[in-house]
Every structure is written in C-alpha cells, then in structure tokens.
Image 1 (cartoon, rainbow, N blue to C red):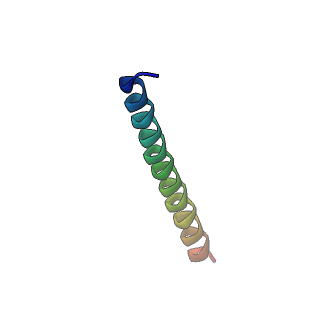
Image 2 (image 1 turned 180 degrees about the vertical axis):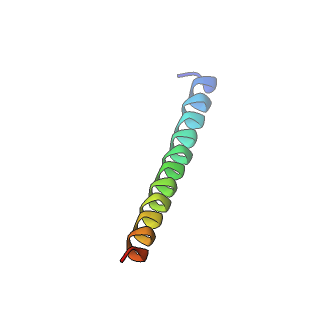
Image 3 (image 1 turned 135 degrees about the vertical axis):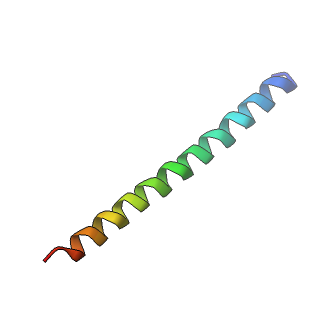
Length: 42
C-alpha cells in the first residue's frame, strides 16, 4: 500500500469514529429527554 492510501484509510477511520461518537451523543440526549418528559407526566 502506498502512503496516500494509508493516510486516506486513517482519515476514514477518524471520520467514522467521530461520526459514531456524534450518533451516540445524539441518542443519549434523545433518551435523556424522553426520560425527563416521562417523569414530568403524571
């Protein structure tokens, strides 16, 4: 594998990890908001 391909794959992995982290944070926020909403309801 040449150097450019390795850098591209590394960038792809970093991008994928940051997207995964963003999705996890969004899901956690969504679940937290849902739980707060359910607690407020009588």
